[in-house]
Structures are given as C-alpha cells and as structure tokens.
Image (cartoon, rainbow, N blue to C red; front, side, top):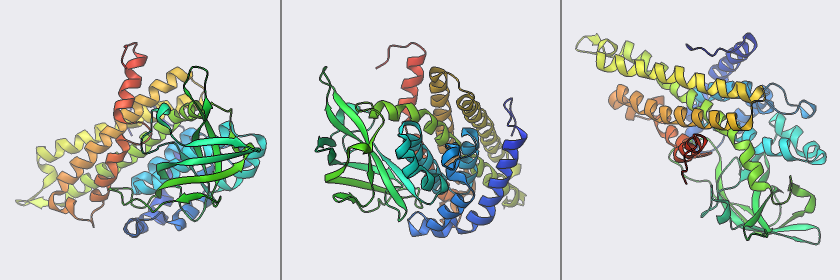
Length: 389
C-alpha cells in the first residue's frame, strides 16, 4: 500500500495473520453463509477464537491490542465478506464499547468477559421508526418504578440483536424531561430473554445478507435500576462520544470493499479477452482500475491516520474531524469501486456466482450506517466554522 502513513512491523504481522485466517477459514464459505441470510455462528466462533472481538478491549476482562488492530481486522475480514466485517465492527463498536467506556465495575465484570471472547454478542438500540440522529424524536420510554426501569417502545435496524448468542442490547430511552423542556435520554442495558423484550423477524436486506439485523419491541420490560449505563440523562451523548471510533471502523470496512474490488477487477482484466487481447490492455478499463488503486491508497491513509490519532490520544475535536473525513471518503469510494468493478465484469458482474455482485449490494449501506454522508459533510463544515444547520 503506497502513501506516507505506514504501519509498524507488529501491525503488519497481525494483518498477515488475519488475512491468512480470512482466506483459509472464511472465504470458502461466504457464498453459502450469504445465501442462508443469517449470521453464521460458526464464523463468529472462529473470529472469537482468534481474539478479534477482544481487540481494543480492557485487558483485565480479556481484551488485547489497540484500535488500529481492530481496524486492520475489520478491513481484512471485510475484504473477504462485508457481512462478517460488519458483524465484528458492530459487536465491538456498538456492543462492547459502551459497556467498556461507561459501565460500572460490576457491569464490566458481568458482561465483558463473554463479549470480548466472542462467546456472546451485544447490540445497541438507538434508531427508531421516527428517530435516528434526532435525539428529541426518541419515543422509547423508561420509567423508574420500585427500583426497576419499566421500558416501552421500539427500535429498528439493530445489528447483532437476534442471534442465538446475543446476550443483551443497550438501548436509549426517555427517562424524563430536562428543565429546558428537552427530553432526558439515558442508556439502559436490557438482557436478552427479559419478558416483554421481543426480537422481530430478520429484515430482508439489499445487502449484508450474512449479518443479523432485526426490529425490537419493548412492552412493560422491567430491568433492575443498576442496568442504567453511565449517567442518567447522558445516554445519547455517551453514544455520540464512541461513534467517532465506529465511523473510522466503518471506513476500514469500506477500505476492505475497495481492495476486494481492485483485486478482483485487476485479475479479471488480465484474464478476460475480447478481440484477441486482455481487456486490461484497453485504456478505458485500465484507467478505471488505476482509479481504484488511488481510492484504496487514499482511504488507507485516512483510515490509519485516524486510527493512530485514537490510539495516541489526540484531542476529541481533531479525532472527530478525522473520523468524519475518513468515513465520508472511504464509504463513497467503496460505492464507486463496487460500481466500477461490476461494470468491468460486464454481464458476469450481474451474476450471483461472481463476488463483485455481492460487494455491489453490500457497498451502499456504508454511506448510511453510523452517520450518513450528509451528516459527515455537516460535521466537517461545522469544524470549518461554517454556520450550517
């Protein structure tokens, strides 16, 4: 990978190990797993055995490595299959990180060991039918009654929420009203199997067929008062504080998509012939593939420069901007890369037996999840001092 930012020997060795694992243990099965339209527990177990769910987690509960290592793992897994990449990204960024950052010692000891080992998965329920980035639109409510939170409401598009090993979902809910009239939003941990907590049928999605995504409903769900995560009234802000890391991780997933499209297109352009010559000898094709290489190199720089900032303790403001830029560029480039690769493959690119069709389907949601492209542009513009609303 060309560029001015380079990873050290330890990270490069780790990349080689994950890439070898993905090629050997995951790649031969991804078409079957995607055809089944469900998250493959056998793949999750393999990733857990390799320690991937513990990357960046607290060492005292079984975590190891740093944020850069997590991004490398997501990139390499995502290069083989985007569904498996998002399963890992969401399990750590949305499932583990809220508890690791804001949980009490008792909450961490109760839930983190199994989550970091990959023996269990956790989800985060923010989005609702009428609410996403607009905290004021959240309708799910939690009332404190006799030392228990009684929860009523619904969530949608929740990743890793319905597998056989999902152990909990942290949700945001209205727990009161502030003095200025704004809703008080808190985060509460709801264990799977709690009466009244219903996981709806899996969505039939355009892409990410081998990832787990469900709507959730809560009808008089009661959990102990000590299941409050972090400070009362700070749930939405707590989530936003960890979201920057998630955006860089999504950018790493997008980088995996770009690299896959680059490699598949390059190999195909060398082998596929028309009028007696490889199509890669035609400037129209060769230039498009060259553009894919540029996308991969630029996204690599943005992703790992941002990851290094996180690991080195950069200011929240600087990391916030770097995360938005990495997410915006890498995800939009992934969509372009998948479109170009499908075009290069021609009619074969429209056939399910060719991986580019799967990457084409999977790419679009990268521009949507964990902050749309429009949101990233808004964040960047505000950091430039523009009075945009």
